[in-house]
Length: 82
Image (tube, rainbow, N blue to C red; front, side, top):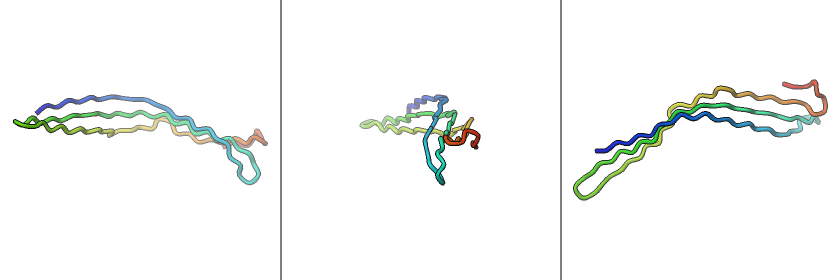
């Protein structure tokens, strides 16, 4: 039996920016997200006399969202935001 494991830690972000019109008001919406992930890729190999069986496990057990913000601002009235 042979076991190979590759583990990694990743930090990433997404920033979605879009336009929408609701009730006659023009809005710009922003949705930035920052996240961290910990995962592993494992191969488990069994060697038999006439064959070799390999199983692959792709595991992403932990995902932590550090920042998840949603905001919108009015293009028409600069003081309207949320």
